[in-house]
Amino acid sequence: MRGVPKKIIFILCISCLIAITTACDKSKSKSDEISHSASVVQQSQSAQRVASVDKAHVEKIEQNKIAVVRRAAEDGNAEAQELMCRNYVSGYGGTVDYHKAFSWCQKSADQGRAGAQYVLGWMYKYGLGVEKNDSQAASWFKKGADQGDLDAQCDLGSAYVKGRGVSKDVGHGMQLILASAEKGLPKAQYFMGAAYIHAVGVERDYRKAMGWNRKAAEQGYIDAQRVLGIAHQKGDGVEKDLVQAHKWLSLAGVENGDAKKRAKQLEQEMSAAQLQLAKEMALRWKSQRKVQN
Image (cartoon, rainbow, N blue to C red; front, side, top):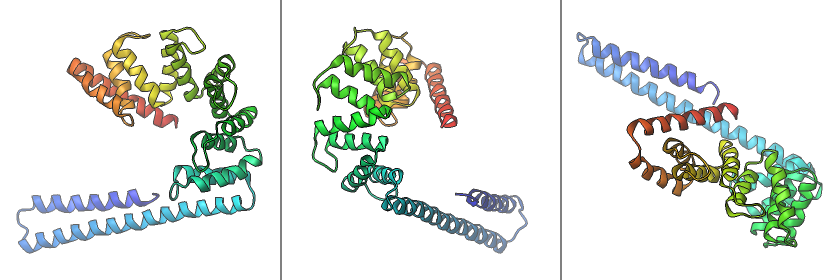
């Protein structure tokens, strides 16, 4: 909200100055104190009105942006059509509507947008806005993967590993997932970690598993953070370290209930100094992520 923070801060500073002056000056009459209090209330109400108007203004701007994208999508722009699809999937600017999302995604995918082809495959995979169809999902994943979309490549690899919509081929599937992981896709990195834990297409190796999980965890992948936290708690594939364990579990716990519960239980085994250090490390990680993004 541009402009508003300064206005609000200015108003609040004036309010604080008035309150302090009133408290320190013992010679002021009761009527003066009442007058000053009324002024504070009026200024506070004014600040609330300004914030309310500004919020409505921002919402209007966002709606205007969506309207512009919609017009472009209706004119046949494939990128805009993909954006409309993703908006309806996420509920951005309105409500979630998988049927409308699928319609826009189909239009964009038919024009060759790799990202739309991935999302369309994802919708077929989970039956969102369309009847579930593993063959169609794999088909659209392949089209997106052929154009270099890493998400599509990873999900196509998963389809081959599990034999969903395609003939099962664990070796080929793992190659596709590894290629996406090496290019930095956190979902694929997490999948590689799981593969090394459960010996899927590779020999079981907890150190390699945690190496891949750490890469995904550093990028904010919640499931990987949870797994890495548990590994540090038990010493599986990594050094046993309660501080690191709590750091990763607490980070994952923002969205994952099990990780949050584990972090709370772990605190019973930690000293006050260890817990403080873990919290500081988690806060530092969040700050670094914020800067990077």
